Length: 366
Ligand SMILES: *[C@@H]1O[C@H](CO)[C@@H](O)[C@H](O)[C@H]1NC(C)=O
Ligand SMILES: *[C@@H]1O[C@H](CO)[C@@H](O)[C@H](O)[C@H]1NC(C)=O
Image (cartoon, rainbow, N blue to C red):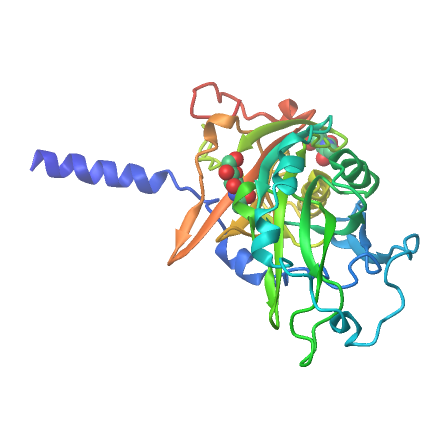
């Protein structure tokens, strides 16, 4: 009987310590899945683009616009007759297998120096990245120049990572009478507003009729810079985990909900804008008896569903929690695996003024 009573008490304790901010699947389900961007494999140079990103004060007014790159018109602008590339038979040996066996591509990928301010995410893959958060356009380069690709990324507002690779593209588009034209090697530099990772390097080409698009020497780099929004301290990096805060020492629930962004680039200032707006709203609408809860802290990260980015997740809190509370390493729902990457927290610089009284035990916010 006695042990039974202890069990009951433990069960009660478990209920009294909720984990209110596990992934909010209602919010996740409300997000429209983003289609994979199409990066052309034919006349790619003529179609080079950058996606512009403007982070505005209001999180709701983040705008993305696609700008055609007007500067580069040198290659294949005049559309050829469909069959012209097929008037010349592809040279013998012009095959995807030969492309994938060409030692020049691994040599270039393996000898490239990592640009200042970036970290190497993966090297010499025979696949480009897909499912990455925040596609921001691409350029076609004349040489496999990682430094140049990084400076192009730096010039695109919001770009924080890039993928550079060799691609076996058809010299003309395939048609029913031209199913396997000659190939050319195109060097692509693709920009993202969120992190590329080894897990994203899974696009190993496609078939266009009999022509096989293939990829080699694919390297991914992520910027080390994370901008801190005005009025905040941080970032505190949490890697692949999210904050999972219990009630604070006063028994207060500090979790204030979630915002998920799907447009533009990963940007902590979007969460900061949401956090401040939530405080403004709450202060204008205080509860009948008690103080309005204001947002003082947030955890932001890229949420992935089966390795494909869902969006930039922002969890808002009324008090700061240290990294030791980053215990959510992702969750399964059915067969779907939701994971967390690129996780950071930021605290209101003046938040200490709002620290609850008496929260000195290790189970409470700092
Ligand atoms: C998440 O991060 C881990 C380690 O930092 C990395 O190995 C993995 O590829 C990442 N996953 C995604 C989907 O970005
Ligand atoms: C930080 O908290 C203080 C006190 O609640 C508040 O006045 C201020 O607006 C907050 N700062 C930001 C950037 O939200």
